[in-house]
Structure formats: structure tokens, C-alpha cells
Length: 134
Image (cartoon, rainbow, N blue to C red; front, side, top):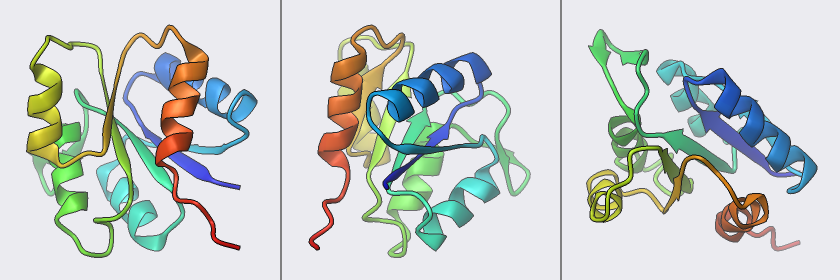
């Protein structure tokens, strides 16, 4: 079973995402906004994909305030976690933001909040999950 790590500081959003992913996507879900935890889960291979909220209001790493873009950059610049797919989630999407966020962060995809089409949301995530070649 594939696991999606939800990095989100809004618990209501995290719950909604969890429900959609487990019910519709048949996926396992983890949730944290703790940056150390995100990095250790990513490095240990416990997650197959990360759903990364862009505007994390409370997340701090090594004494500095970090947002989803910064955390994604850290993951993408580490060879151990560079191949882990990251999808950015943001509520403040202006045209052009999307490209900027993706370029800046190196993320693999982009979802706008609120998620209206649940099936499309699941499909977008399933499309980026690594396929097991068994």
C-alpha cells in the first residue's frame, strides 16, 4: 500500500485530504507539519509521495521559519530524497504563481485549495506515485 505524507498546518484540510486519499485512493496517510519529521520520513522511505502545503505558518527548521517551498527545496537537493514526488498545495493561486512555485521548489505537481473535484485530486496523486514493478 502506498503512503502519502500530508504536510499541512490546517488540521481540517489535513483531515479532508486524508479522508479522500484513504476512501477514494485506497492509500495510507501520514500527517505532520514538523519539518524534522517530514525529512526523517522522507529519508527513511516511509512515504511514497508528499503533499506539501506551501504556506506553513508554524513550521520551523533549525531555528528558522520555513514554508513548503523551502522544505521542498531541501528534499529535492538531497540525493536521498530527490526522487520522492512532491505535490504543492496552495490556496493563494494566481496565474503565474503555479509556474513560479514549481520552478522555485522543484516540485512535481501542484494542487489548488479548496479541492473541489475529489476524483481529480486522487487521480493526480496516483499518477505521480512510483509504480511497483513486481
